[in-house]
Length: 116
Image: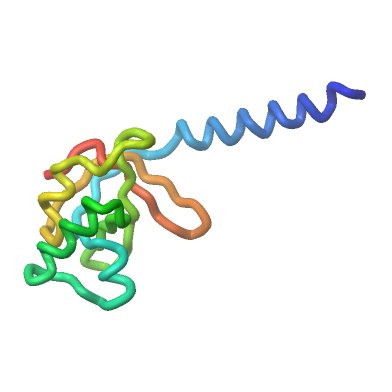
């Protein structure tokens, strides 16, 4: 009987790991926005580029906002790493990001495997 909780935990972990491994690779086009200014103040566009770059360098989350209004929070390609320079230098620009898409608690996330 003592093994039953351990087996249950092992099964739950296996399902969780499988779900992470099955994240679909996708390509999404949209504009890069810094989450703080975009969400709190509605700031975006070419006049906001310098501020958006500063925010991204400071670690403020970066959003990819599609034409339909769907948002993805971008994740760096590796844990404990900053956003790639390609992301930071293209803040407020229209870009195409290829990466792995995740959804958690109704929020969309996308790793940055490549950016054009």
